[in-house]
Amino acid sequence: MEQRDGDGEPQAAPGAEAGASVASVASLNEQRAAALRATAEVLTEGGAPAEFAAAAVAELGEGAAEVLRADPWAVLSLPGVRPEQADGFARGLLGTAAGPGDPRRAQALAPWLLEQAALRGHSALEIGELATGLEKLGLPDAAAALQEVVTDGRVMAFQEELPGHQPAASDEDDDEPPMRTLLALERLALAEESLADGLVRVMSTFVPGVDAETEDAADPDEADGTPEPVAPAPTAWEAAAAAAPSASAAALIRAVADSALVAHTGSEAARAELAALLHAAGSLGLRAWAATWTDQGRDSLAALLPATGTGAAEAAPPVAVLADLLTGAAGPGRAADGTLALDLLVVLDAPLLDVELAATLLEALADGTRLVLSGDPGQLWSAGAGRFFADLVAAKACPTVASRTPDFGPIGELVSGIGIGELQPVDAPEKEVVILTAKDGGEAVHRAIQLLTDSIPRALGIPVEQVVLLTPGHGGNAGTRALNAAAKARLNPGPGRFGGFDPGDRVVYSPAPGLARPGRVLDGDAAGLHLELTDGTRLTLAPAQAAGLRHGWALTVHQAVGRRWPGVVAVLPDDAAAGLTRQWVYTAFGRAERHLSVVHAAGQALPQAVAERAAQPRTTRLRAILAEHTEQ
Picture 1 (cartoon, rainbow, N blue to C red):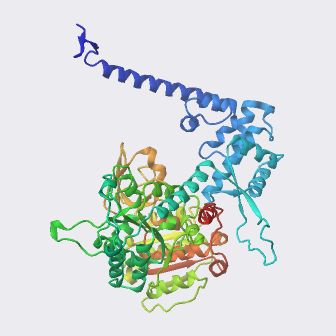
Picture 2 (cartoon, helix red, strand yellow; picture 1 turned 45 degrees about the horizontal axis):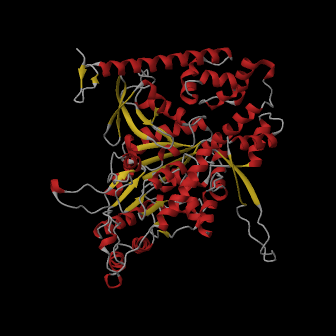
């Protein structure tokens, strides 16, 4: 019998909707399967592996087969594909028609070069540098090709004043300063624009508090029910600053009282100033939270905060890992308009934020929110594109409070000297700093493993689990692969039963570039590898996720940022000497809390890097964009 609803209209029979849903899913699955088959056929025809079909469909959509036939160089957008491989694929499909000057080739090569530059931290490139890169790849007329690429919208072009230009005293007022043209990927260009807009919005909507005798009475007719940001009076802020535990903490509190956006620079000991600010802001009635890069940073800052409540009633400290704060896994939650429900946010390790993550953070802040960005300017920048914190400080777009709190002890003294370009010996009566030389990478590995497994645990009482090996890269004769292989052979030998890993292996999981979560392997089965992370959480990695897992006795310094260990062995192999910078050395040595051993096979490259090579340069646009906003 036909069923009808309350209005007498025909109603679907029970189970009909569920059946339709199942049929819809089956249809979608069949469409995807057909797209994969068609894409695999095109890939095979062009001489590329059919296994790339899934990546091609994910990147180019279900019409990937048609896209690749119409433009074989579109294969260059797939992960891991290089220009020579894309050229070979194009010749496989087009034959002799696949020439080096094909416009489609330029349309693919320019974005690819910009993506490679982004991996090195650039958010843009000068047009001449990009043209040179295209010429090296055999493009006949790189300048004309770039004009077509910009016109087509594959990349975005910008004009800005040449950095470092100082007008001469004799220059006329109407003389134009020298300019440069930058080219950028759309996503990075929009991220820097959005980031700058967000910073300006936070500053322009800020309303400082006023004392009661100068405050006008609020008009109840103007109230719209929207809670206004808490704005303590200046006298209340001054009282909080006067009660601060240090002069640097007082200066920070005063800056936050007067400004919506404040930059704070300092090393590890300076975190006490941020804890003092959080405590003061909470006492003034602000919804104040801090965000850190890692769980270890979260716990160390929380330990500096005074306890509130007792026993079961003790409140959790207002500190969260930044990724958890943005996803809602931790933190204050979201207001009705989708912004973070807080009045003050303090972001630690700010140099580690790339421009896209920083733009996401600013979008999550409501108008009038106070924002403090804190970091050590001597440490490595973000793994992603840009140099957000450095550009913000250099642009002088907001007050900057420089901590006067030093890191004490021999390690702190050594790292402080490196920060100003000096590598000087320090007194280390308790063997806090030990420097050993090695003739080559092989000897460096041998010495590092001896320190990890025997010397440091035996002589200093630091367990091997609390010692880490740090090195510049994964490859080479003393990179993480060589060091981890040697460490596993000594500490947890095994056949690698689960994709190269065994229970008990020390590992590091990188769910995204710039994020590293150390842990150990518990076991493995058909579901995947079962891990226990250092914060106590347990995680199961499916086989498809295993690409983000590496052994973790040895890490690159980029993997180690945001964390510290009681014992650190910094390995400087001979084949990595050319890539050393002051920034790298400063960050590596600063990961040590109690003991630092340096296994040194880089010769004079180490003192030269500290004295002469501050950091690997990055081309970015944020500083210029902020300068434009400041002038308006």
